Length: 289
Image (cartoon, rainbow, N blue to C red):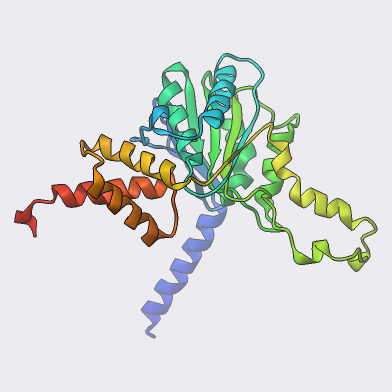
């Protein structure tokens, strides 16, 4: 390696080190947006506006009437300045949990509802996010999709503080809405179910086990979603095909069933994917083959 190349490599390493310790200058937050994504930069982050949020109607969510009614009621209370709860939606994949949260933005953005999407690994920044929006006039839902934690995850502690409330982090204009495919957000180890041992000198290991599995109970509103049966799946597929102006005839029904068999699941997500695939194939122009 030449002296020049060696010098360049050393300079690049020095720049990388400086970037991690120098203060990050964030762009001004676009408060005209209705949704943002928290983007981490080294040890800090910023609110990045989502210019084209996915517009989903509440009426598009089928076979979850009770869950939908409860979440909508809770959100209306929140928007009217009334007591409201943090929300956890758990259950089978593809049953509308995330879609329901996103549809709230379509329904209530005109009434001041705003949404911030935060990845699980960025939950360590929750206190900073709350501090940024604390004095804003809007009402914010912090949305965390597919929420699970590892045993020693720092994000777990940050979320617990916000859910439980503390002098530093409580804010009347913020709620957390999360989804998860598992009931217990912290992993349960096989050893947790063995007869009590006193490894590492712990006197009451049961307390630690309870702490690991009790995070879900810190959400005031906890709703479960369930897998669809065949008839429900077909009705959802027909509903999505209707949005593409395609009738759900016998051929479409057979295609929907074949599609679900190929995916090994019957869910709202699979029904939506089928509708897009089927509609695209029907409308594909021969000239493009």
